[in-house]
Length: 166
Image (spheres, one colour):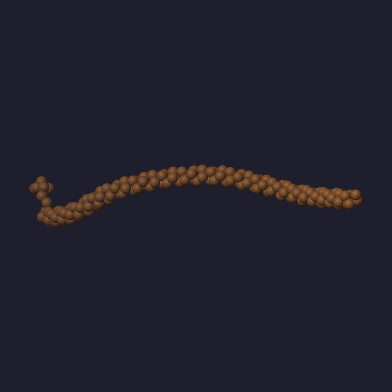
C-alpha cells in the first residue's frame, strides 16, 4: 500500500494541479494571442520599414542625381565666368592700347596744330613784310615817277625856253 500511495495523488492535489494547468493553458493561450498580435504589428512595421527604405533609396538616388546636376551646372557656370573674366581682361587690355594710340594721335595732332599755328604766323609775317615792301616799292616808284615828271617838265620848260631865246 505504501507503494500504491506513492503512485497516487489525492483528489484535492489533482484538482489543484488540474486547475493550475487550466490557468496556465489559458495564460499560455492569452500570451500566444498577444504574441500573434505583436508579430502582426512587427510584420506590419517591417513592411513599412521596407517601403520606407525603398522610398529613401529612391530619394537618395534622386538627390544624388540632382546634386550631380547642380555640381555640373556650377562647374559650367564657373567655367563661363572664368571665360568672361578672361574676355573682359582682353577687352580692357585692348581698350588701354587703343587709348594709348588715341592719346599718341591727339598729341601728334596738337603738335601739328602748333606747327600750323607757327606756319600761319610766319606766313602772316611774310605777308606783312611783303605788303611793307610793296608799299615801299610803290612809294619809291611814285617818288621816282614824280622826280621823273619833274625832270621831264623841267626839260620841256627849258626846251620851250631855249627856242624863245633864239
